[in-house]
Length: 170
Image 1: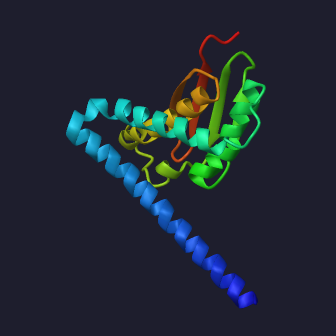
Image 2: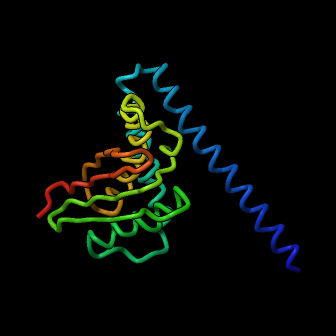
């Protein structure tokens, strides 16, 4: 019985590893496609727009059976824990807020940046890989009733921060 359980665990991990690899490859190919179709200056816009649609739809399905959230902080915590786990297989590492409508989500080992060099040239390119996730966050929050703006920042790769600014925060 132990042998069978270990085999199932290994097969599950292999499938998850394959799915992760395919997701990263697909993400990279989307960037290449948008570069060819629209030019390099349009990549962040196209990736964010696509991410918005994904985040909006994904959170609609994921929260279908759950009661509605009452406070903005609860919603952002849901993004950091549940949605992050759904997308990246782990929770976000840190969440900070100033309690006036600004939240910062930090991921110390962001999936799309783990293979990016520390060189400044590559750090600037890393923003292309973050625009999709900015869109996912914005789409998810919009669907949950929080219209916002999401920006990203890379300090030392693969650490990144996503700053959420709630529109019309009071």
